[in-house]
Length: 600
Ligand code: OXD
Ligand code: MN
Image 1 (cartoon, rainbow, N blue to C red):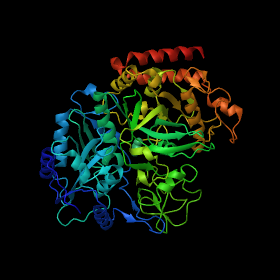
Image 2: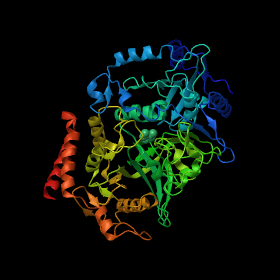
Image 3: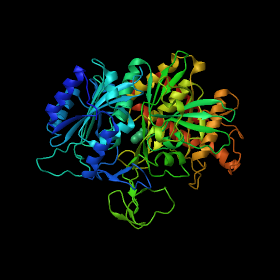
Image 4: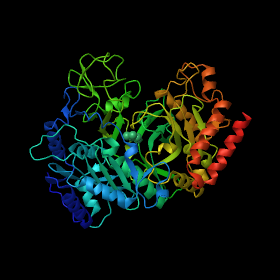
């Protein structure tokens, strides 16, 4: 392994400070090499953090089973510590910064005893791009260090770009489980009763304690690329969003790039990798979770995916729902909390209709269909490099990004919300984003299936007051050349009939909606107007080769008057939490909707 060098004084001072505070047994600067990855994996095989999968079935792949108490993001333990409480806003947990610093310092004191402290330099965005943000994660988890090497550009090269006085976001992480002299380690150390995922937006710092899982611990993703970056974006006039980015090519070879915000575990990865059922259309992936958008010199919004890997939800992924993902996962993947098969491979609910015999569940116990609970945890994940995927667009890491033609907002809604609705203009689109709602999933701790408002799918990820964030979106639109702004659409693949059946087949057939979106961008197809916005005319959605009744298609775009009145009341309640800060333009949009509801 190469010797890691930096002359960045701020970094060297911070590393020393953390070392003194956390008292690890040694410090390891990550260079990002293959040899280093092999060494860390070796260590994790020894501590049983990882299990090697059958190389005949899945080369260079591993399985991890977390502590059953550490399985998802912990939103109630996630904090935005801005100087003023009003800058965190009603949707974030706020703590006074100096008080929180004291709490954290006492938690981190000695927290790495007996462990190696890894210094992980990473770049969100291509290394050296002027739009990228550099972070340094200090962690006492080898699982986190290796996962960061997959999810971000990581290692010595980043330090090279950082130079002597480059800026970075310090991101300190500890699993909060110091080891006493001679104490043997557990496979998944954590401290579930003491978790803190903390952001200081003004000083751009992240501190995370007590969890080793996903967005709680891989600090480049939700913490840096969304919560901290959303604040940087507000200050600098761009957008840091919880969105996929896809490249759509028509049979005529016309390319459109589409971004889409969907709450966690609502199918972003599936849509980003979708295989269209429409002949001649293709979709390639630019990103599946995070999208940074800036205006280019041409006045268009250009998007980059700041990540380098996929940290996707495994259950439900199959040949039918996402064949590209399955191919991506064929090698060099870490699976966390899936079930294990008797021949050393992985399995999860939905991968096959029938579970194979002899399964071991995510907790390590033998499992059959009669066992209580699923074989794989509903939030089981895969961690894999973007470049493993067959569907990745060649331009996915172009530092300029890709020009966005359309933005989708979507969620799981059993009723009311049509299959697709085009916003009348940018302001109306911001309104639709600000009231986005979805039935909750297993991506975060808490009850599954409740309807919650998740504006722009950013509720857990906006690093400042959500009402100011709405204002920022309005400002971005107001200052732009309207003809170059992406069109905004609300989509819903999850609408059900009165009998409770899904009305739309979803998956590869969602490309039919993408086709309508592309045609609306070109103005080559019409629309009909309803209270929520512009929906397809009868025959507007291409149903060639699809067996769906005209009644179902009609129902898919129908807006029920009574449900709409309930929706208006629910939006009013949602908006009331923002008080005076709610932008006037959105209050006006709500009055327009209320007026339409009263007439329908
Ligand atoms: C994710 C999430 O992990 O949104 O992407 O929870
Ligand atoms: Mn996400």
